[in-house]
Each structure stands twice: as structure tokens, then as C-alpha cells.
Length: 190
Image (tube, rainbow, N blue to C red):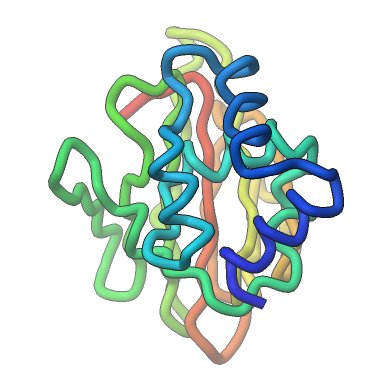
């Protein structure tokens, strides 16, 4: 199922017209809500939106992100790589890179992590002296080891984990195919 089909299906299950769904999103999000035109473009399949668009759709449809992304077979993640009209890519090494997919004004940092087979990120940890940090990882495809403070968890597509990111952590491809994950860090820190 494509993203556009999932949005339409969930909207109809909840007995919303497109206008009613957009109005609900505006009521929840306020002035930063996606435009009606963006909602039209998502439902027509011309645009998959950004991470913030998906988040707002989840709020408007009252569905968790995990359930929202379930059964979606075509999801053009490249649509989310726009950050102030340019891409920001952080290369850990030749097999691991993270692309910033959230806007600069968001209170959180959202990344799409791509890991080639056998690749892993370099160990990192957010600074305890500036505050408390939380990271959340959601596996889009492949298998990923999430290693936090020496403890390893295997995550498969649809699997997620959250942890205190002031602890040392890294991510490693646990399979034989490319793996991709969505990682959200709150509060934002680079």
C-alpha cells in the first residue's frame, strides 16, 4: 500500500472529508499546520511530505506513527531530505550516514540513518552537562542492533526503542541487506 492510499483509508475509516481532516490538523497544530494543498498533494501521491507532515497526519487521524507506517510499501524517504532547501548529511564512515530530515526550527532533531551491510555508526553520547536527552529509533527496513551502554537490542522493521542518549550508544546493521532507520533526538542537539 502506498502512503497516499493509507492516508485516504484512515481518513475514510474515521469519516473525515479532506477538508475536515485539514481543519482538525489546524485545530491541533495551529499556525504551523500543513497546508490544505500539501494534504491534497500527499493524497494524490505527488508528494510524500516531510517528517513534520507525517507527524501532523498522525495527530489529525489519531494514530501512532508505527501503525500509520504499517503496510506502506512505497515510501519515498528522499522527500524528507529538505532542510531549508538543502540536504544535511553526516557521514560516520563509508557504510553509515545520517541525513537530517527535520527543519531547523523544530525542537527535536530527526535523522534518517542508512547502514550498509556490516556497517555501524561510531559510538556517541550527548553531553550530560547540558541536560537530559532522549533518542528514539524506528527501523524502516533491515535489521539493526541498537547498542546502549554495552547492552545490545535487535530491532527489525517496525521495531523501535528509546533510551537516554547521554549514555554511550551506536547502531549497527545486523543483517545482510541495507538497513534504514528514523532517529529522533529530543531536545535538539548537534
